[in-house]
Image 1 (tube, one colour):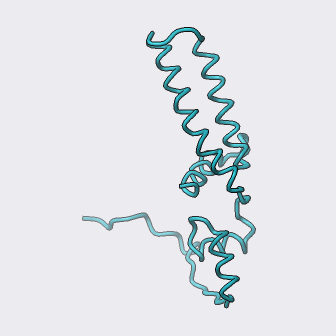
Image 2 (image 1 turned 60 degrees about the vertical axis):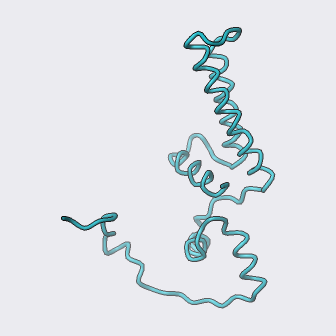
Length: 130
């Protein structure tokens, strides 16, 4: 029976240097508010390497989550039209509307549809919102 878990990282990706830093209580509270679902270490590493995604205002997060339900309902409506359980609108129009709502959701999070990492960014955002 082989080892369980992910394959080991190559030697060049091993993290073997520790950097210690002290924070006041207020600074630590501020860091904790900003880091969302990330660990302190991950957030500090990403911030130090300028790899943090843009901060998403809470209002945008709420709208993003609310629009998720709309996207799901539109998807169900397209399926109902295609199987003959709903009438009155061509499925292409509803599909196009669903795509536009999804784009609005991406815009709320600052996700560019032409980025190579759009799916990763959306998944990351989904995890942070919840």
